[in-house]
Length: 95
Image 1: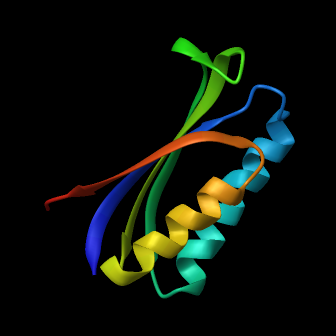
Image 2 (image 1 turned 135 degrees about the vertical axis):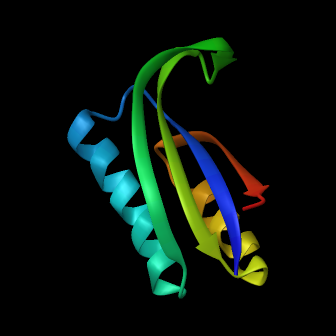
């Protein structure tokens, strides 16, 4: 398994309870496929550098996890399909 960091940008239209559900859904997705979720930090609402779908703010979430590389594409497909997520970035980290 490899170590990754995922930064998720969630729409400001999603209220705080649903942001927690988005976090839980991502963590559950990783766990169901044999991955290990190390840490999740909610950075809160921040101003965007440029508008995304006409939004100037969004909620940021950082997730550190371990997952098999072949399952990463499946995770990214699920993130793209999620309605509340505006953008995401997965980066492999060395430890």
